[in-house]
Image 1 (cartoon, helix red, strand yellow):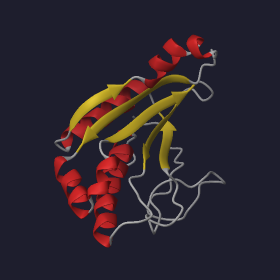
Image 2 (cartoon, rainbow, N blue to C red):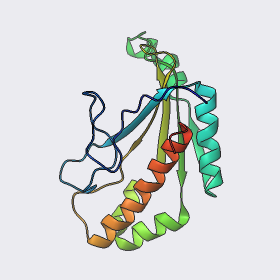
Image 3 (spheres, one colour):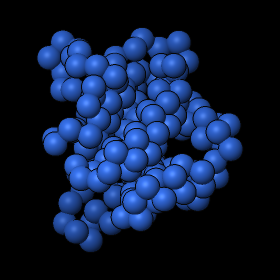
Image 4 (tube, one colour):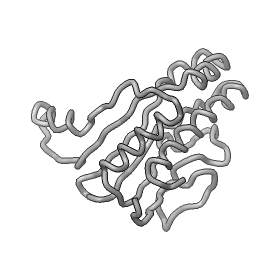
Length: 170
């Protein structure tokens, strides 16, 4: 995947890319108003990115519980809800979990069970063909103990690493 990189995420810092919105890990990942969704983007082929994400997840010893074909569902149900607007060329999500990380997060605070399983979305919009986006919901809570916040940050680092690896942004 030797595509040009158009990075719209700003992991581990506060830098922005030419007026684009900030996404990604902030210096204080559990601040009172973090971006709830992290998005990384670059020009690539959908099949390459989805396969690279699958391999990255499995290489960590994680099992993909479900692969959601979001675009197919939208196309199938569009007529039923009165909309034929094409949003994506393709859009899929992987749902998975890490037994070790999940246990740590839930031992820190049982409420954290609501943040599991984890999911990462890969999509290509109809408006920008050829640009792939990999996104995930940040596993954060504005409340919780220091142990809970630390455990959730571990989960976020896992998701961030997988998203970047899928796009070749190591």
